[in-house]
Image (tube, rainbow, N blue to C red; front, side, top):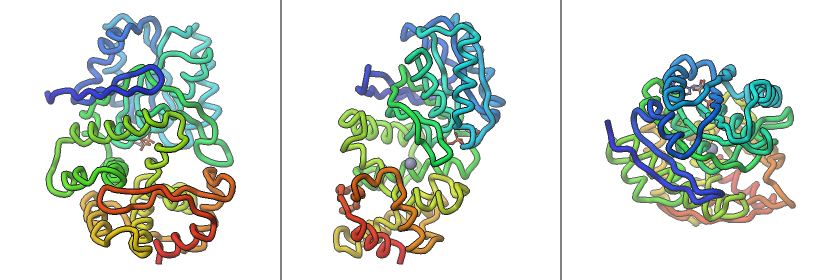
Length: 352
Ligand code: ADP
Ligand code: ZN
């Protein structure tokens, strides 16, 4: 077994992220060591439950928890108000109290939904993240953003709510479909692009341990989240590549996976930055080499006008300005507030 890596996150009440193979077998003892006990509600989706629910359930029982589970169908459409309410009713029917614990066993969909349920059940119950996708491990399980989707769009209702613990069992990635792994790699590459050139070298040159990769991303995310828990400034860097990505996802009717869309978005903004003289051209080459290595797309299948029009509807377009993360070199970026004309220019240069 590889050595477990540990990163402490100082947002809200500080909590620890542990990364290593085999951690799901220890979910019970790890939770108990934090002083958690009583009832455990494991929330998972059908795919993940078939693979790992029994393991987590036994571990929690062994540690003395009274264990319940709630399994939702896999896929984004499960991040719904209906499922949120169903989970809350289920917890109430089974007499869960505020000192009991919800466990999110799965990818981003399960983590976001379970986190929001934990945030609002009795105004906040204990919450543990057990991410089983690379994307959830490096992105959604850390930082305390929880949400469900509304008819009008993704993640439109939610709360900032930090978990008590994140246990990332990297052995679960062995069963992850290749496409899902690639999707997670898009977010991994994002971290290197916006702030860590050395990490880009590591990703380009060698086959680094996945634990190393996840730990480096979580450490960067920890730093960003600690500086800006409630998404007012620093955290905007995490949106690198995401403006065009959100438009691509939207235009595809959400059939393009998030990671693929982020890959296309990163390529577009980097191309635009080079055309504007803000970034040297080799940054684009480094990015494209990495995207190819992880079988990610980098060409946008949609036209300039379509992308621009959808971007204008994005929820973050406050007061006629949009903040973009512009690459300024290998592993460097700056925030730039753009008005709609500047945004149009950037999208034009990026997609040409
Ligand atoms: P993400 O984490 O990418 O945001 P999801 O939560 O929708 O997204 O997970 C992506 C898909 O991968 C879902 O169909 C889910 O059931 C499946 N999945 C999650 N973790 C694993 C795993 N470790 N092994 C196999 N399939 C998994
Ligand atoms: Zn993302």
